[in-house]
Image (cartoon, rainbow, N blue to C red; front, side):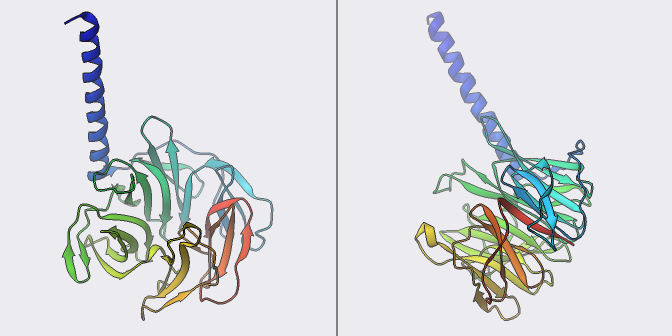
Length: 322
């Protein structure tokens, strides 16, 4: 074998080993709970009641008074791709550059200083904090799952900020679908929302080309489907209603319609927003939801009445601080 040929063989072997190592690292990050890690202080800023926080068009977290959402935004130091806050604790998803897509889920205290960090595979998609600030969740887009038909799948995780225990991907939670235990390789979860008890949660699960609304029990570590065709749920502050996006058309420009679901009766009501909104809404108060539409944040009554109204220009990831 010539020296050149030996060199080419060596380089090929190193490439294979490198790919295998990267694949194993992604698999391990997906399967194994990882400890949250303490981090360094982030940019200044303090969460105060009465603020509407959001991500600006420049990718920075800022806020305006809830009483005057047309005011000039304050803050703008913290860079996040997705942001959520609750109970004085925030989650900031940050995409990290590199040959393999990665995301850091950064947990922040009331002074917006970093307290924990979880390293994840994939690209940021959704983030949500519970009302108390104890439970955090994220969803990321990943590639490489063998069952993925569209080239990517989702991994959703949950972090208990009190114990520091993180599950980077909840897809192995025991699932009951239509009253029967269900197992499938293509199960995907996204869009987690928490109840006030920090135990019950709701999310979307997809399998075999269908999506379902699921109710999860964190303590018992189990989940069950409630209905089909309900994505990115957001639980009302009183825990009695969900707003979700429902697939209503195959046309990409008109695919989604926001709906309210009464959890006691399972009755759904379409909201007055008729545009196709591809977002997990947040509750502005007990009667109104807000969401990203185009470059801005909009609001609409949650009972199907009224009309959409623009809240903040050049913003996304809205969350009310109370």
